[in-house]
Image: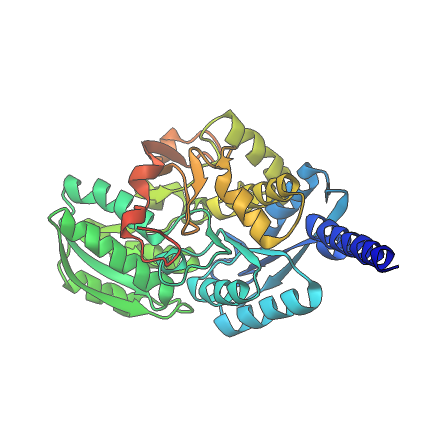
Length: 405
């Protein structure tokens, strides 16, 4: 009798264990849900915004709309460039909407807040829009991926082009939050390492539109280079107003440290021609980028920025990792993502490291002269390709606790 009971108990345990493994190996809640949390209406909305959600939805459609036999859903929200709103929305998505992964995350303050929360809840974030290197250093988590660019790569590649060409003295106009501080700090290190000097900086609010007082301070510094440690509408307005002040005619040069195709489109080639900056993607790089970008244009009526193209790539590779893992369990998916070689129209030599940094080739761009342009979005040329290993912070310098040294 005891033997029979033991067999029954053992059989029941096997059934329970098998059921548990089956659940773990499948799709939780019978749906994979991806959240696009970004600036939908503010100064970064053109370079991210609805266009980032369009890219994610394209990736889901191209993947087939299902993974492991279960549907994939995409939802979006505007974080309004406020960390508290971003964190509250992410919490609502994780707790009530059962969102599995959040991407976009333009604005470093918002990204840092959401990545911290996601780490606590063991949810994946694939950041395509924010830039602060804190995301893969002191604020790293086992579930955070920094996918497109960061302030180390932007500052390094740009400084290495500008300083040897005569831009020895710098003054910064900096967005006064985590992103701007990180971009100014990283760029300053490379400028001084290359023999240049930092003459000072002035910080401005994210929402400002009048840059006259900041430009006057930069002008009075006498610096050869005015480094714009800002992005989106801030950069556009600063460059336009600098042109009105005639700063470029007085021997000073503006250098944008985070520029997007949409910024150049807004400025126009007459204003932006000759400007050099660093990017992680250009729609006209090769046949693969053109094929994707033309399909994207048909939907969004604009060529994709690196944030938008990166969101497509991040989503596609996330779904591939789920398929390979046989589960949407965050630990299993992260293990697959970190084992993959990321090679698609967006990423060349892509690899997600232990700190969550996705390293890939970066590009030094130059804005074309009006006479060189052959079409509405024919804005740029690639001056130099910078290999992944040379562009991003080496792991030996990382302060991420996940990195073994």
